[in-house]
Length: 225
Image 1: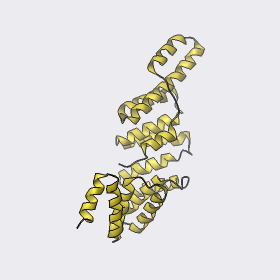
Image 2: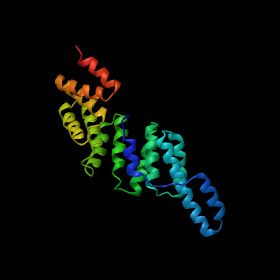
Image 3: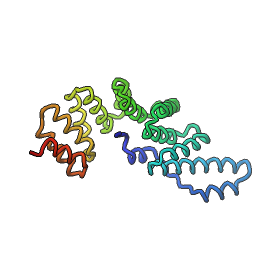
Image 4: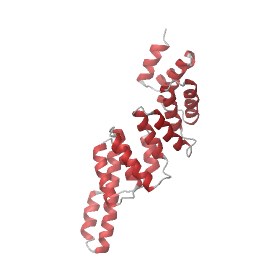
């Protein structure tokens, strides 16, 4: 499932927190009075979030969720932990839990519009095109230059067999971002439906040049005589 790019998500959400387990243990021992307890709690939050993010980056999503939950237990308004947790749940296809976590984010901050892109992907995966389009519209109303939003809308329109609208959207996505092979794969498939085989083959060749095996397969299936 194509979702928000993990690196983009980390750049967007990350805070620079560096806190080792050894530092946490020693800090907890030194700060045993009431004022020190506040510092211990703050340090624990930093530690849990940093560990959760590390496991998220390494695709250890179950373990990442455990750490984010621990951080949320100490700070139930930490948006980054909720968002990473929700995205990890989405990657595990635990969609109901993911949606509930995204709902918590909206309650905390209704302007956190990346939630709507993520929930649109979930609705798309659940074949609920109408709900996916609704959430995507909310996202794009605040993020008009998001190639990820236009890519998803192109996929929804392609599924609905509205190939002209899908072509318009994938062009918008490619005007902004040209380095994702999946965008060209979708563009090529749309062009095949629009009877533009030559242009479709140009897209598949570009994907093959990116060393994408599926692009090579599409090129062989549709373009090699």
